[in-house]
Image 1 (cartoon, rainbow, N blue to C red):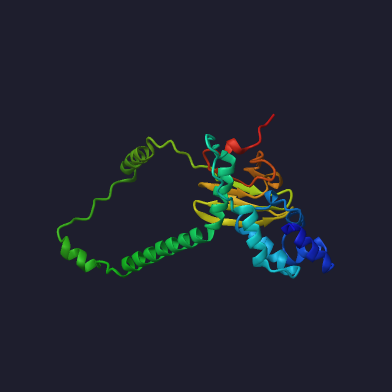
Image 2: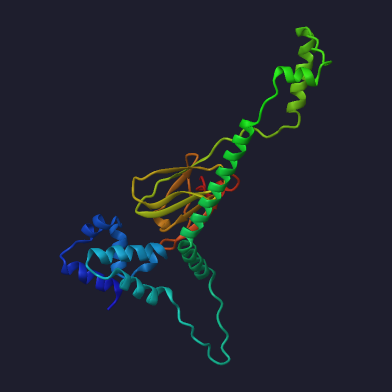
Length: 272
């Protein structure tokens, strides 16, 4: 029997509804129905699917590890089939390669996160050490300065009229050649139209990673590179600086995009 059918039977045997399982596991009802129908293409792959299966199985009294083992055997492991004589192997479609790479990225996410945290902690400790070393360094007093430079005379005080041209010239020199005006800070606003798993990473730091529901809202500052990983593109909606964003993928196909201050306009909806 299929994995989804086993879970459905166990649920109905216990007289539990999909909504009751959803409230207990915090998994959306649409994802639970997709699992019962073996529609795993509609469920975020990798760690997320396995976590959903364990939680679902636990609520209906099944062995979660056995369910996960069956899922990985049926849907994740592809047996090697030798090609027939004279038959050339077909190249792997880019879309399939992208899905496999996404699954591997999700499995390694925990390890990458620990590495980033260790690097950030090392940088913080280094900055604290430099600060305290500089703070404890003794400063030269007035008497020390007299001993070092006994013949330095006090600068002559110039009249205000004489100082004004010099100050104006210094300002002109300081600003000459500067064409970079202050950049207006952009904001990426995320507001899904239905249940949707979303992860946002800003310059390597993860700021959002959860299943967002209708009415949820997250704002991300678009000051650097923002990587968005979306489980269900058809339910995902966003805007940048108040302008609506365009569709970023096909329904049922998890998508990853990179947005930054240079390319964000290419992700906005074309104005007619």
